[in-house]
Length: 346
Image (cartoon, rainbow, N blue to C red; front, side, top):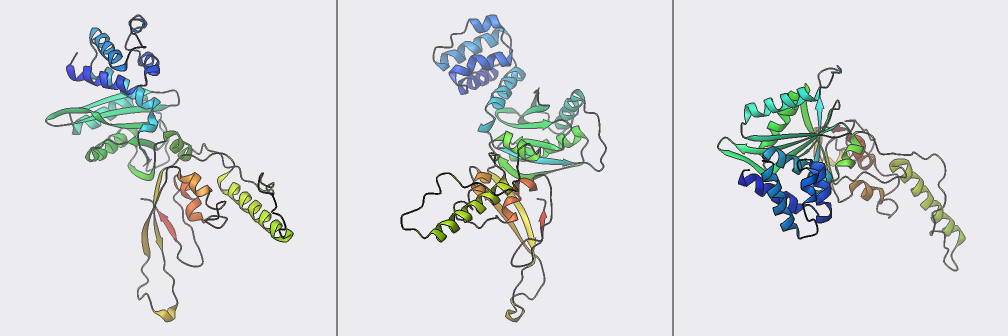
């Protein structure tokens, strides 16, 4: 076994929590059950990793097996990576039969035709997700296994989730290979990013629930305590306002937890309106800007604005549109002030 392969396997094992090493090696399936029985999982991780490497040498492990172990680790600990959503486009509405073997061959052929020194590893999961790991090299250097790109593609959907390598220059090659392997004609980033891959899937696949409420919300618990000598009319007005905000918030965000989104971005194009007497603008050119949102939990942060008194209820569509923008590029019109006239796909 090559020394670089042995070192990579050792480092991968060291990343795994000690009480999960056995489970992950079983999922890997490269070592037999009899070999796993010889391992002492109660010793320090460095010793465990050395013993795993010795067993892998007996089985003549190569870089493909080492990469497969890394895929399993990243599938379990997918929240350690930052994921971006990409959408592919077709020229027509034709539906084609998806063949996983053909997809793999075309992806590898397309990528290796432009760059020979790459390591490409696939793994299929039960939810029709194909995980692809790509380690990048150069014409003169072997692939760097410590800085791979990850792609998660759900067959027969236009959505791809990419956790890019720090080597950003290889991203166009990755996108071209995806287009060539799937018969799509265009691919573009949707400017939605998060460490939580499942939340991004919930958004683009419409898997999270928004239960729109049409009835008057019940009083919130813990918020009906009246201070002594309080004006009954003021107390009733405050309670009614809180119930109104609660009801409107549920209509927009639903009652369940929000998908964990950390970054969103879109472009705005609007007409700036001012008093003609002020003569501020001589040209009727549209006003363009780029709006970025960033938060550890963006949608929950937006949901909390109105109840915290930091924004009026209902929230502006410019804020509540973010999960919907992931699925539809749409236009929105407003009559007054500085509002966007259209959302432009990045």
